[in-house]
Length: 416
Image 1 (cartoon, one colour):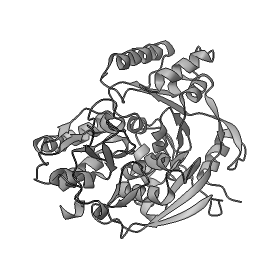
Image 2 (spheres, rainbow, N blue to C red):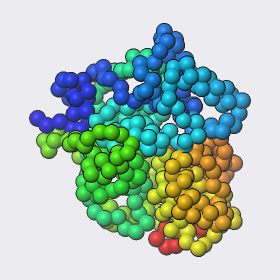
Image 3 (cartoon, one colour):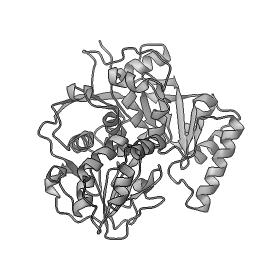
């Protein structure tokens, strides 16, 4: 009987044939912590008697949630992590590079066939490279920092087969909101979601990252795309490794198979207060918005910002909307800057911030007042996610966000 890509990764790493449902202790290729979860993970490491991390070259530390520090406790957390990095000789340590998940991939710290964990739920984004990547809690991360391994129950896989050609101004974010609505917020609990099909094979890495990033929004343990020419081209210059084939067998056993066609798909919007509430934009068009956020690890890449700029054209953003734009990393910021898009956004009325999580988690800036509405390209719209629990967050693509920022109401980007 054939194996899924996830089963193959665990089998290769553990040196034995492993199938979904089995519990194994697997070696870890990369362990990521950031400024919110890192301090607690480090404390757990010490509580377990840790003195030296398993391998400083495979520990990744980033500051992104509250950077620059927006409070005394945040500043203290930063100091604590800097001291740990110095003590342990950790060099994969970035304080001004941007959102952790984007930076991990840009720096080549997750690669095809690897097992990578992060103390953040959206670690599953690294599956865009063909890695098995998943978020873990701070206690588990403390264990990983000490031992370099972790127990896993190897997950079953849902295969999401996607076909068709996207319409103009419809893309990966619309697809994943549609898939989340189809599967449900807990429909993939502790399962991997394998994105496959002709549409995925033609999708760029930015789009694949968007899909895998939001696997967790369906309860998924991981999101993954089999590495192909697009993957290996992305890995060039990031990791010194030869390409190899890694894909699920034709006769692999799946928990379920689902098919999606994108040819007739409308732009999608997830309405408050859950991610699996996606509806066609036509269902909510005309809703007033107070703030538009374009950024995050989900949609803060150059490709996303370029699309937003194309929708903007020579127009201005509505004076009644606060528009916050944040490239996901220093590299993405520089690409956007060199293309002249940051100047374009600023002249149109946007506030462009340095790479960080920004309003996504509602912890630093861009907070909503009671009764306000945010339209966001981020990955979660839970109550209170971006400020007041009496505020509302709608999720959408960069194209829909830009169109709505122009009109001041939720708008189909194909009409702008």
